Amino acid sequence: MPTDLPPPTHPVERLPEEWEAILAEWGEPRYRALQVFKWIHQRGVTDPAEMTDVPKRLRARLVEEGLSLPLTIAHVHESQDRTRKMLVRLPDDRDVETVLIPQLRNVDPDRDDEEDEVTPGRVPGHRITQCISSQVGCAMGCVFCASGIAGLERHLSAAEIVSQVLAGRARLTEGEALRNVVFMGMGEPLHNYGAVARSLALLCHQDGLNLSTRRVTVSTSGLVPEIDRLATDFGGQVQLAISLHAVDDARRSELMPINRKHPLRDLVAALKRYPLPKRRRITIEYTLIRGVNDSDAEAKELTRLLRGVPIKVNLIPMNPVPGSPLGAPDLSAIERFQSQLRDQGTACYVRAQRGDAIAAACGQLALHGKPRKVKTKLPTIRD
Image (cartoon, rainbow, N blue to C red):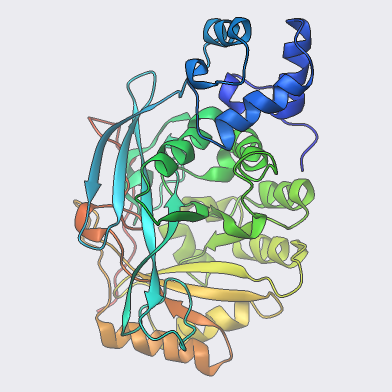
């Protein structure tokens, strides 16, 4: 775990040792720190009045300290497959979105497919993946992503990030269990490294939610120094996903301006440095865009580019973004691209389109209201 986290800015984002320090100043015994931390992160309680084994004097002090959930759920939109997109209202009246996604399960118990792979005979199960946001908007400007087109308004605090999970867990139905947390909502997580690192420490703390690091995925567009920092701070234990989407610098720079600063050569070198535990792989996210990055040659180059990196590839048919002429290839082209990768020995899955009917799918989470619009140049589309 990192040793140089930025100081906490809200009670919800304090670690147990930070609670110990402040409670000592208040004249409270050390064991109270773990009590308070467990109430917040294990039980999901942020109202001091409900902390029944905490003395009244301390509950009153926690109220004075401002202990509460630093967000509200303004609206929940549920699709037919039980995907739930929650509109999260922040203290400054800005909004972000978080999504609860039921993992697909096999009707046939003898089958063993990838958790979110599109294959016949699979239905939504009771294991939930929560997709969370790390920023209000995004500065990366990726042309196929609604968040990037809108631009960045501000970073989220660690308390605002973790509280999405606390609020989401409180809305699980009977029999559902939170299994995975993925930083794949609004924003570039590694652009907000300090808050994201603190939130990882909180989510995975053994006395809190106690998520296994293999169940937490940080997705990045390719900020190379921060990938190295994540590797150092968490020892490669946190799952890493790379938004790749193109296999040559010219095309990737068209799609993702960050590539001009961190080109593919540097990104691939960082992936080779990432200290993966045994039998773990880096996830490569590849949004298939019709006539842009879906050719046979690009499928072959993807495998060549990442040779020597333990990977699995998630193919994501592009989800509609308002005002964009870009779209997904037809099913036959998607299957052909997948076959090309598998024929070269690359593990490759087509991600199920979950929540697209309620604009909760990959690339569709966007700012509400009237955000500034980043100027983006569309890539060349092949006939």
